[in-house]
Image (cartoon, rainbow, N blue to C red; front, top):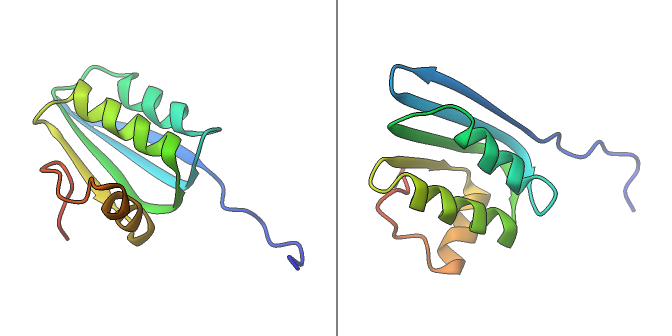
Length: 104
């Protein structure tokens, strides 16, 4: 039984450096938050996108869908930095070998 643990807080922040956009996502990315992650990445024009998911604790099918849509929006110019949880979900879903997924 959960004794009042605080759920991870979702956030998606964007920062630009020239034509490079870095979106840092924390917490749970699910059907309630995946579109916010997607929209944050599209909010500012950029030639390259780094999607930093290293602080993501949960990643569901809605998150996968948003990620695939971002990969389509930034063909060849997106880099995804996954957390252990995100890496596992992407491996299970068959997306673990995508060129945009950072191998580290």
